[in-house]
Image 1: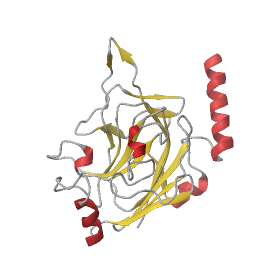
Image 2: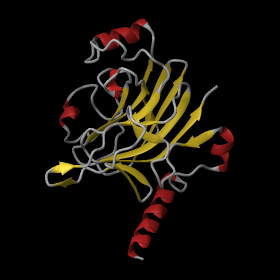
Image 3: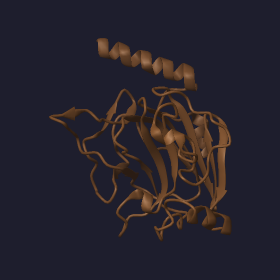
Length: 238
């Protein structure tokens, strides 16, 4: 009974804060073509990178998909980066996230598998970070909402650790915009001389396939810190 009461309170708070029940679509969203990528109850639709399964370190509780970093005998459960089952190209992608104090994670897109060892060998990243105390917060282009190591946010809109943030990525024919908590933070176009110059000046310059694809899987990163996600949904654009 106590667990049910706590869950009900969390659900109620979510409705007050975000205007609707978590992990659900309004009638208008359904009409507009939105689809849930997380049902709030299971990891259906997600799997580990280059695997057909998902490791036990990724769990679902109280309507969130989260990375469990609990250690037993000094070791934590296997987790790793996870990806969507399907690939996407032109879309509006929306996700809520919160991170533990001093934590780091990310949303990586246009991910390819094949011969690549890591999701970030091909996919650019929208940074998920506690800007207050994680060491990356001291590095320009490594802060929450940035296009990681490539473009810094125009405005800092991230909320403190353990508070929910609403993030959005809009991808349309190689043109991208990032939004964090209702404010556009980053804009860029892939496949241009300007894009090539950004990559050449980044830590990804030695990765020949980085940033070359405008279609791929969307990934949630295991950076070793506890992170929670919910309200993961997508609308494909024509």
